[in-house]
Length: 112
Length: 337
Image (cartoon, rainbow over all chains, first blue to last red):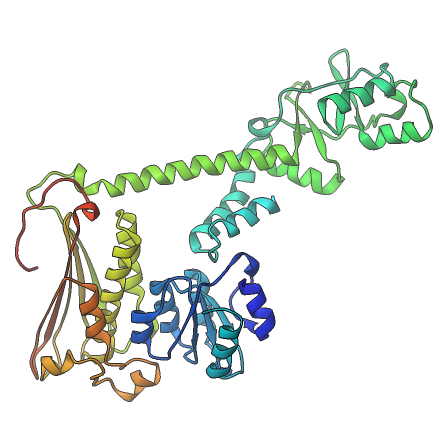
């Protein structure tokens, strides 16, 4: 399952600079809004689902090598967060759906 | 050119990083840096104006080219393309001379001009190949978009090799410098409540480790440990603190120092889930009470010196396994930081 298919099926909004998402295949996912838990539990190339939308999300994603972050419940990151994400190669996507729904659908799509 | 960009993006199936972005601007830069004579084909197949259309078709078929310059007495007098030959074919005019169907109005570029000039000419004229002449207007080569792509790729490979050499030099830093005890010290001032820049120092440290040749796993371990320590300074300290990383051939020592408010009960702070983070930090997802627990799982040794009303010193140490050591040279073991 490529990131492009995930974006299309979940109708996600791309916040960072668009790129060839069909070349990216996330492996598994992690969900938490507690940053230390993400630091401990997320794996490189995971999709991270969170409702946090601030600057430290980018720092954690970049240090943990999580390439894709899905920000849920319509939380909107500030412009400088998106700029930093572009610099650090972190893809930010957003949705108005709650985390529970997004995680469930990702699981159904085989992101396990 | 677009295929080159695609390859850069899809190289490891990973999102584009700032390093890849540098490559892209480098391609644009190269189209100005590279000269046409550096990328053109020097082997040119020419036709004479009095040769027949049939001769022209044969040449293009055998040499697998889509056009050829027409030369008379050493001078470039025209160009014949597949389109010109197709025009002759539809007229069933194979015996006519090339001169009848060639374009006499030759668009050419100079060998000493930058590659971007050829790109501009391709875009403006919609032709696929251009004759290249020297300062005396003599034909010296041909250039196609394919030649440019190849030339750019070769130049980028050369760049890449230079970067590899630079990394190699950094990696051997510890071997090249002889002392009884060599260490590289990185220091960062961390400001209190500076959530916006939280994690920046850790990113720089992780990158430095990779530059020095650390394994991805080792760089990640250090990254997690220093991130948690860095965030502790941001969340909890009165005046911020200093993050210091000492890289030695056989171990990494990481330390944060601050001047308060101090931890009243260090044992409690070490319990998973115990946190004193203020509401502001908790709203941002900090204060899980997992920071020190995470650090402990990433390092070989962790020590905290603190007390209520005092400063805190957090010391972390990672011993490098023999295959991870930054150089073969044995450093002298010294306790503590």
